[in-house]
Image 1 (cartoon, rainbow, N blue to C red):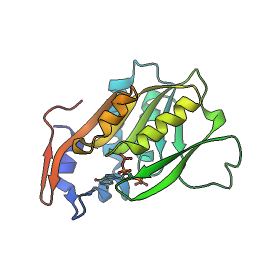
Image 2: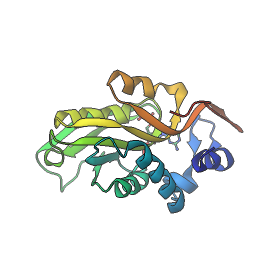
Image 3: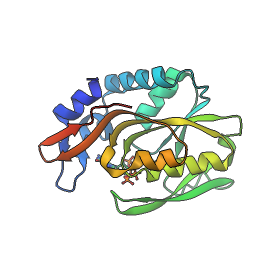
Image 4: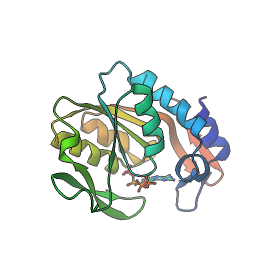
Length: 193
Ligand code: G4P
């Protein structure tokens, strides 16, 4: 069992609305040592894949994605969800609907960040329905770059995000795969892929 799996089982809690709360080590308070381990694991999986850039979606993906970019010695791109006064022109945008948060937003990236030479690794904290990651894939394809894969901290296998990405030809590697969760009970999938 890896460190993140232990943390999820020991410290994670499942809320009434079916959301896994990991606020004090991933997405509100961040554990830097855990992030470093997570990044080393992603780097070991993706290091020979010719990755030129790591890409994530603000905000909770930033910490693990930055550490992974450092391990792979490549830049990090952070996709924006809010309209920005600084990013005012030459943008790629795509609408993403979030089932978990019941909102939608325009995922945005400046056109000059990727070229057809780039091979991009997507890193994100959660894979639920795969809408955010699929939006990231659309933006990467708009810039004619290619997708090396998606590295996910926590995948909820029962929400189908992996299949959505597979349909887009994207290989997914998750450090924690949850096949079932309810209050007081988190069940990990046997296979970690
Ligand atoms: P999808 O992208 O896989 O389709 O997932 P969905 O739209 O349903 O959910 C997107 C948002 O909800 C993401 O945050 C994701 O991290 C978060 N999320 C999904 N499931 C869980 C969960 O079980 N626990 C927690 N804590 N978060 C979950 P976001 O809107 O991108 O916000 P941010 O936290 O990155 O700023």
